[in-house]
Length: 376
Image (cartoon, rainbow, N blue to C red; front, side, top):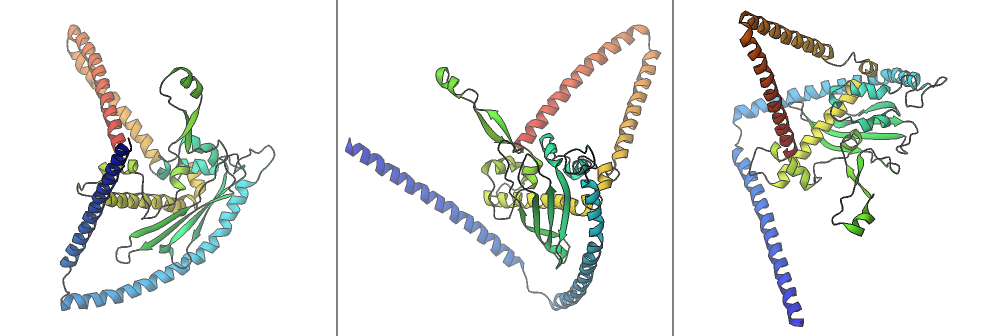
């Protein structure tokens, strides 16, 4: 018996060693690939000709003037930002003033002010969920803090909440650390720092409670009956208040789900992870910029819906579409009336049959689309 155990232990040890060797080989392959790519880039670089060198010197002088211009713009940004602050403070005072029988929300003067403003902005169409809304009702103010040294180095957002049943925080913050490419103006997001929300017991809207699945039956199933577990679900508070940096590692499931985003078949998991993180950070920065440049300064216009782009046009388009459909129906009825009565009845029957077939085809297309989205 002792020999058998010893043999099993040796086999396990050999298997572990073999596994480590394989892992080492994979790491070496990755390093080789990186070195090859680096060498390819180095080979592509050629020594500049005299003309190119001269033009680069001119370019550097131009860039110096551009930097001087940016410095003057920065001074104006700080100057006028300070002049605008009292107006935003006045807005907050009006919104948070609680009169007689005022609702116990973050903005008693206009209940759900910030929630409605966000609902009218296209950047938040997909991120706001029904279960986020009661929490956002307690939002009293959203503030922006510019980087006084250099606007291209980032900014901070502050979300102020009144006392609420969901979390203890009076303020949630979101800081964007960025750099700008001086040649194209493209913003590179280096890091995103967000407050980690400490939810009160049973009040976390980013998860849902679902019944545990119990295998087997009888006494064991009866014992586990009624037990629940928490599972993550989409939420503005989950997606927006998360910290991110380029070196972070995403879960394997997230990479597999996003696999369709990557065109290059030979891209390894590390490269996919880096590309997906970059995409998420850029998207998050766009939403933060929408808060800074659009929602915060013009919140009342977003609350009323006046600032919402193409809202009226969409309604007009819908009406035009309906009118076009009505016209098409009228034309087909006129064509049918020109034919004799008996084929007319058959035409109607065919139309009904075709309608059902079209509905089934549409349902099938919708189901296929859902499956495709799940795979992505």
